[in-house]
Image 1 (tube, rainbow over the protein chains, first blue to last red):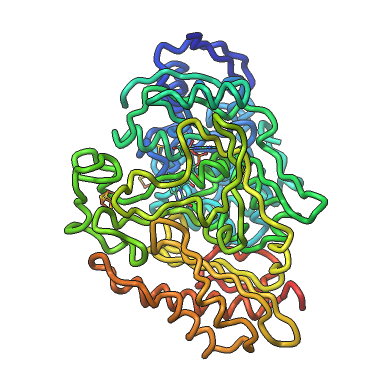
Image 2: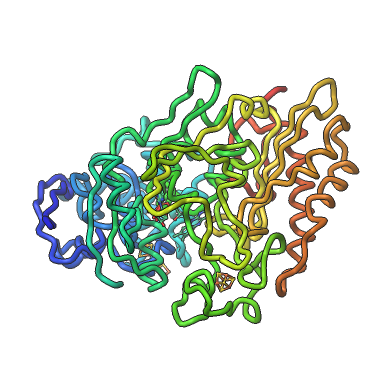
Length: 165
Length: 352
Ligand SMILES: Cc1cc2nc3c(=O)[nH]c(=O)nc-3n(C[C@H](O)[C@H](O)[C@H](O)COP(=O)(O)OP(=O)(O)OC[C@H]3O[C@@H](n4cnc5c(N)ncnc54)[C@H](O)[C@@H]3O)c2cc1C
Ligand code: SF4
Ligand code: FES
Ligand code: FES
């Protein structure tokens, strides 16, 4: 059985030999590609810490079998800034004190980027909260996060992000 | 997780042949299957990946007024399809009330129909469970069973079917298209799921190798678009499975109910269509008393399977509420908290 897959990760083409068919995208990113920004919280689809974009859509990488995503275009938290220029969502999180602990923040930012790209929430805070509900923990930062999304959304008319169109 | 072989199916025939082998299961997005495999509750020898199969990811609005939804259409794609959500608003609302955005972006239509129960003992390989291991008993019977079935259960199993999507689908007479070793066939969704009886491990009418290729809604299903709701009660207002839920769809003419479609979720091992309640509504004016009467009929056969008597009352209430909201008119847009009875829906009506 050929366990080689090809992926685009943060704009870079990668061909990866998998030694174990059980590898999830999350494990692949963290353990094979050293992209440890994506976090493993529950590993069962319940917390959102592992959120990445696959072909422009946010998914839980912990429940995604790597073999199945052969050919996919992935964006992780490492791929959203443009050099030293932060992604507008990252900048808005800083401006609005939206940072949670280091564990939950990357997934929360990826989820916010995905939410804006989906273009379904508009400027309705209730829809933004619902849209981010897949990121379970938000400790004290939640109001800041909602404000950050509102601001980033206003900046991104047409819901274009650098990597997810 | 036990190791397994991985096969990527390139054609329907190849998929069916591979999946018909003992120990094989289909893999769609994996959001339920991988979860069960990580828990040790599913231990397949071989995964047959269907996500690269061509042509199963289409939503086709057919000329006879029906809609055909390919098995690989993602839950979010379907819910946000404007034509689809406009014609079948309760289905879109049910989809958006399920799981989280991340999961809906991955989860497929076929996988949603085939997801397994959330009974905690089913998930835990250390527990006795007749569904996971036939003949081993049922630890839920004397265990934590607040959320278990109140209709159609048996001594062998009291689990519920967890899907939201399937509830309005069964109300609207959805049909499942299946391809198997002996060709194609169609099964009404209502007849697709089995009640547990003596064999709770046999959950549906599929045979080894059978692949769901599409779900179809008949032309008539559109005629309820102006008066349709899906409401869901859960322990928090989003990102949780239903305790109970209800789909209600009405067709009103001259201020009276001409047709009614009702189904309950979270009450049984299948989405529970309730024709006795539908019959009570036909010809009546949409009023609270008649909704109460229908809800009583819907739950007439219900009995607790454990600490869950409250679910019977809750199911009646959510049905009455869903009927009242459906009668007052489908919201012009899915509410901010889809399926939640607590979400305020601005007045604009579909047929205002
Ligand atoms: C944290 C969490 C919360 C959730 N909350 C909800 C909720 O509130 N409401 C809700 O409805 N769901 C909920 N879900 C369940 C989710 O909707 C399902 O996991 C999803 O729909 C399954 O789709 P999938 O494509 O990932 O299927 P998979 O996991 O790939 O497959 C599921 C099953 O279906 C079989 N299968 C898949 N496709 C086919 C096919 N075409 N033909 C035959 N068999 C097939 C597979 O063999 C497997 O047995 C939740 C899941 C999680 C993890
Ligand atoms: S209720 Fe059904 S699924 Fe749950 S433990 Fe009993 S047999 Fe298993
Ligand atoms: S680690 Fe994937 S959702 Fe928690
Ligand atoms: S644990 Fe990370 S934000 Fe709460």
